Image (cartoon, rainbow, N blue to C red):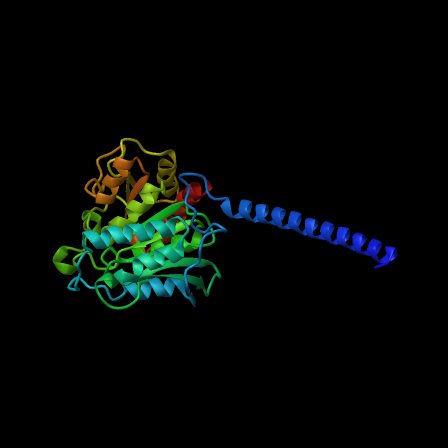
Length: 330
C-alpha cells in the first residue's frame, strides 16, 4: 500500500468515527427527551382522565349522546328486575372505574369485561365532543346497574348524579343537558326504576349498588357532585326547589350562590342549611359518604315545573350550570 493510500484510509476512519460519535449523541438526547415527555403526569390528587397521556378505549363510535342516554332510560319500569352486584363484583367495578378515572381506559376495559361492562369512546354527532361511556355490553344483570359518562376532552372537575331516572321524571334529561353544556363533567346514571326489584333499586338509599360504588370513586378523588331529584306537586306547593348539602356541617359559598341564582331567576328556594325543608336528603347514602370524606355534595330537589318542559326548566338548568362552571374553574 502506498503512502497516499494509507493517508486516505486514516482520514476516512477518523471521519467515520466522528459521524458515529455524533449519531450516538443524538440518540442519547432523543431518548432523554422521550423519557421526560412520557414521565410527566398530573399532580397528586388530580384526576388524569382526558390527559394527553391517557390511554384510549379500544371501542370507538359516533353517537347521539342525548338519544343514547334517553333511549337507555325510557324503558325502565317499576316492576322490572334488579339485582345489585355482589362484594367481589363491586370490588372489581371500583378498581375498573378507578383505572378509568386515572386515565387508563385500556386497563379499565380489561377489569370491567368480566362484569359484562365495556368502555367506549363516543363522539357526539351533534357537538363533536368526545365522551367515555361505561355501559353493559349485552343483556344481563349489569345492564341494570347503570352507566357512567365522562367528558374525554377536559380534565374531570364535577359530577351530576341521577339515582332515580324516569321515577323522578326528566332528571335524566337534565343530567344530559348539564353534561353537554359544561366541560369537565361526569354523569352517573342509575339503570333501574327506583321501585324495581321489589324496591331494591333505590340506589340513593343503598350502599351495595354500582351507582354508589362509582360515586365513591369520584369522591375519593375530590370530585364535587350534585345529585338531581324531583318531587311531586303534592309534596309541597311552597317551593320550586329544595337545596341541601346532605350531612355536611357547613355550606360552600358556591352552593349558597346557586340558591341565590335560582332565586334571582324567579324560583322559590328552600335552603336546607338555614331552614327546615322537606326532602333535605339527610338519609341519602352518597351524601353521608361525602360527609365522611369531607367531599362536596349537593342534593337538589326540583318541582315538576323546573324539569322537562316546565316553565322554570331553563332557569333551573342555567343556575345549576353556573355552579358546575364554578367547580370547573377551580
